[in-house]
Amino acid sequence: MHKNLKTKFCKLPLNSPIILLSGCVGFGEEYTRIDGFSNAEVGAICLKGTTLEPRLGNMPHRVIETPSGMINAIGLQNPGVDAVIDNILPALDKTETRFIINISGSLVADYGEIARRFDNSDIDAIEINISCPNVEEGGAAFGNDPDMSYRVVEACRQNTSKPLITKLSPNQTDIGLCAQRCIDAGTDGLAVINTLTGMAIDTNTRKPIIGNNQGGLSGPAIKPIALLKVHQVYQVSKKHQVPIIGQGGITTVDDALEFIIAGAAAVGIGTALFYDPLICGKINAGISQYLLDNDLNNIDELIGTLQLNNSTSLC
Image 1 (cartoon, rainbow, N blue to C red):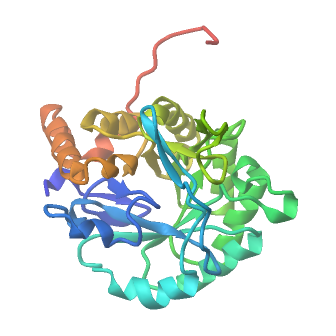
Image 2: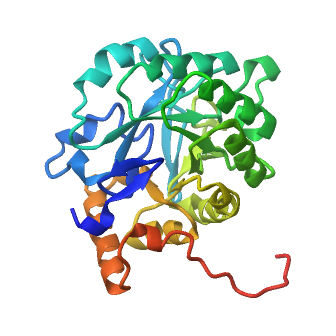
Image 3: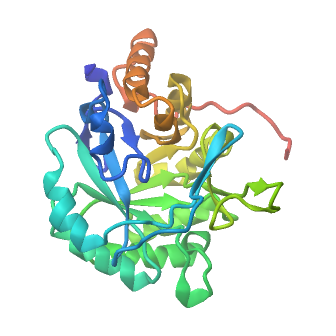
């Protein structure tokens, strides 16, 4: 690993700025079965979304390929927090990389309780998925309401000393305001962005292909949106020195560099792993070469160096 790729996120030392995204690598060991893949090539792995109680997930179909991306609606299938702590975490090789747990809930209290239980584990950090529906408020997603986002982060912050990373939804009016509220509540980092909501239809049956009718759209199709959202959030987060994981359609070295230039301190790889499991090594090599070519000592010197054009247009 090139020394220039070593970095920190929420004060955690990382081998690389690459973070494998939740839901794409299961509970951390799946891709290790692939010849040539190594967890040591990435800075951290964000484990599958975990809830208070076990969940079977949604009815099929759960995943479908779409133009320049994919839609998924897994439904948070997982064995529950206790099984993850007792059976899964002890089996992970923590000498290779960092591990982040992703947590979800239907109630604010759920998030606080899950955070409390993981506080006594050896997980490195907790990512809060605030895109879940709030059953107490008619099913509206926590992450689409800045005040509800605040309450979720606050509940977690009160129950853990672990670094908290809040995963922001793009499906809201003002992502910058939501970022500020999450920072006010005590988040240590931000993940930008979660998937957009999308649908695919079977023209023969005239029904949605996804069993849940709709799901999260990821992949290259959402990259331009994700880049803008990272830039917008960075205008807020940089004032508080809160780092960002930039994510959404990263498939090449240039994609990763764009996110870093826009303000990301780390980059998330997800959908790309499904068709190129060895992509992380290629992106690492490319970032390292870019730093050398541009006489940069490390990733920090590149973060947020975007220079906007002078423009008065509203479009």
